[in-house]
Amino acid sequence: EAGVAQSPRYKIIEKRQSVAFWCNPISGHATLYWYQQILGQGPKLLIQFQNNGVVDDSQLPKDRFSAERLKGVDSTLKIQPAKLEDSAVYLCASSSILGDYEQYFGPGTRLTVT
Amino acid sequence: AQKITQTQPGMFVQEKEAVTLDCTYDTSDPSYGLFWYKQPSSGEMIFLIYQGSYDQQNATEGRYSLNFQKARKSANLVISASQLGDSAMYFCAMREPNDYKLSFGAGTTVTVRA
Image 1 (tube, rainbow over the protein chains, first blue to last red):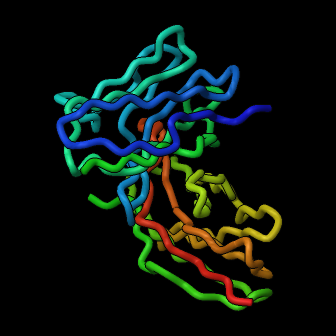
Image 2 (image 1 turned 180 degrees about the horizontal axis):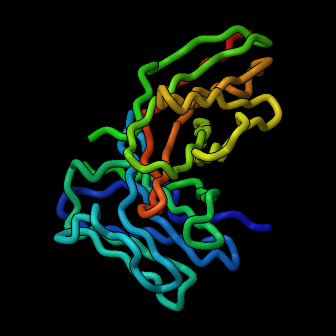
């Protein structure tokens, strides 16, 4: 079974530029999560989808961050415009049902904003 | 308020010895789940072990065991017979029933010495 795929693995941009990350969850997994992990901290949930609907986006900075999950499969996370403090690893995870106790994580995208 | 506290930023352990990673949590809900994840330098989060709040016995998975002390709100991870490949960051996380996201602690870095 293929795991959670993410791309790109690394991205370097200048502040005020825009960037997009892509995630493909494990086949059949209805729930998809995007986490932000700042260096030296634990991951923090940004947004959670159930199929193509948003379950929780309370910690998503909506003035600059957006995410979508068209057709309930792949998802993209966008930042526009980026700030220095957005430098972090962005992790995508999926689980088979809402509340499933095991979330499967992708390798992450390491973003550096200069 | 901090839901998960990991007080050990880093630990060293000799190969083949056991190591205990501390985790305390804060919740007023009687139903919750506790998780431990491993994050090697490659960046992905690897699920290790799960403990439900109503589970009567401490969870075990191979060399990993969870020392669950409910009254103390403690969920320490014990890694027995440490191996060089255990060198990684370890995160404790909690999921509350009406809040499906995982709340992570700051993590503990484990370095196994030969």
